[in-house]
Image (cartoon, rainbow, N blue to C red; front, side, top):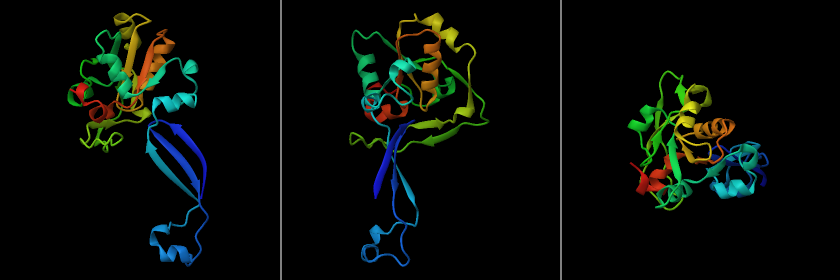
Length: 213
């Protein structure tokens, strides 16, 4: 079995493995150890939780280097440390819909400025699996699962942000899924210079319960 490559994107890391096809009947090794028996297939794909922002930075960012993107990817823990410090200059912006902000788990003190209008007929509520990176087992937080085709940019999002913040304000942008990266891109294109994309907000419940409201 060979690891052909590892790809970082979105919220998962994937490794593509190539295995030889099994003979029929199974080899002696497989017959003596059923755990070694793998369905006949040329490729297997394994998934792991999102890599830390440090690992992503070392690899040049998810979609290119941070200088190219114009914003910085940060972990939930980094965002928490920055916002909770006594002399913090950071503002946490929850760009989810007002409904999500009110009904679902929210970061304490976050300012809700929705960046998108939903075009899907009905949001799909789902439970995320346990986040056991640090041995946590506190369960899941309810969330809506969106695809990019399910929403459009709110026409007044950028203007609202410009009215409330200076272009050099330090802004942490969070959501549940991948909308925050799109919002960061919009803000950078509008001239904001201190934009930070927070990894999936859903993990705050287990990695940073002290800021969960």
